[in-house]
Image (tube, rainbow, N blue to C red; front, side):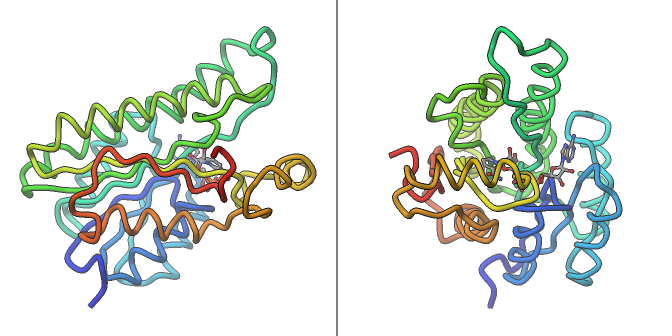
Length: 246
Ligand SMILES: NC(=O)c1ccc[n+]([C@@H]2O[C@H](COP(=O)([O-])OP(=O)(O)OC[C@H]3O[C@@H](n4cnc5c(N)ncnc54)[C@H](O)[C@@H]3O)[C@@H](O)[C@H]2O)c1
């Protein structure tokens, strides 16, 4: 029997990288999974390749209407969601604080922070009605360690930490757990060839395990956090970064 048998999950950013890896792993472990992403073609393909346990809906995490729609779609297709993985995100746009445009700051805030808030807000009623649930929020090692040019991205990702902690306090009495993963440098389409070269040259020597991580290595920790294996774990903050921030 799979570790997520009987669970219904919504995974944002499902078209690529860590979201795609969670779609595949959660479905293999017995969950019914609904992926949401602004990238329609790739998102549909991920769900199609998984088969009957998966569905896809074009979804924008920054829109409350879009969240309402994906919760309704999930409930109609597989049942009320009891798992949420807030994974969608935009990459950092490395510029110094004095050069960050208001537009760039707002865009990163809107997707990387506000989108997580809306996701939590939208699934809480069905999780409460179901008598419990598990939310995993994907932050970043950038929220734990300062770096030049990462301010806007790191500020948004740091706020996820607070949302998770406060959510864990409020939702614990309802059997809803909220945990945070802080990925380090992970090989996904978010990290382009130029960034990959910089990461390998400057960051990898500072990573205890001396390598970048894989999307599957994030998915397996997310699986633990949304499964009953972690039934007494909430408000946990887990860096999955090969030891980078330690
Ligand atoms: N790759 C890394 O090294 C790394 C490190 C730390 C944290 N992260 C975080 O991990 C998460 C997953 O990143 P990834 O590396 O898999 O990246 P990715 O680019 O492969 O996937 C991100 C997905 O989010 C989707 N997305 C973007 N804006 C959206 C929106 N408004 N609504 C819905 N979907 C949207 C994209 O279309 C894409 O499919 C992100 O939150 C990212 O910030 C990544």
